[in-house]
Image 1 (cartoon, helix red, strand yellow):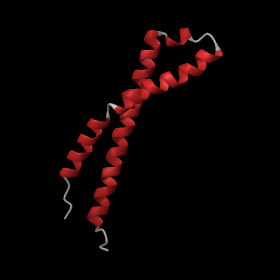
Image 2 (cartoon, one colour):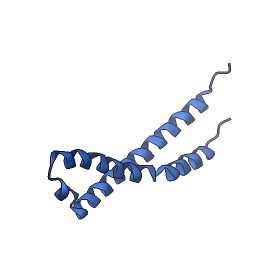
Image 3 (tube, rainbow, N blue to C red):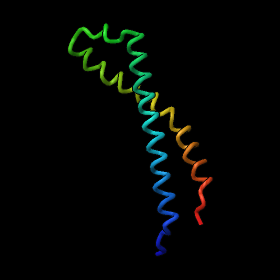
Length: 89
């Protein structure tokens, strides 16, 4: 089994860091957008019972998940193009 070179290790670390930064940005933007949408719609006004409170949390989570997952193609594109610019040899 061949060992990885120092250049390959540095490249993989840089790729993981780039992916982490892109995911952190996407997470922050998804949280901000979800909070803004909930505020504009005043979704909390419909919470009048314990059952509706229990349903409010998964609905909010799903809204955030949809926004976060839509960033996946952009994240893959950015990290892929970044990897293509690296010297792997």
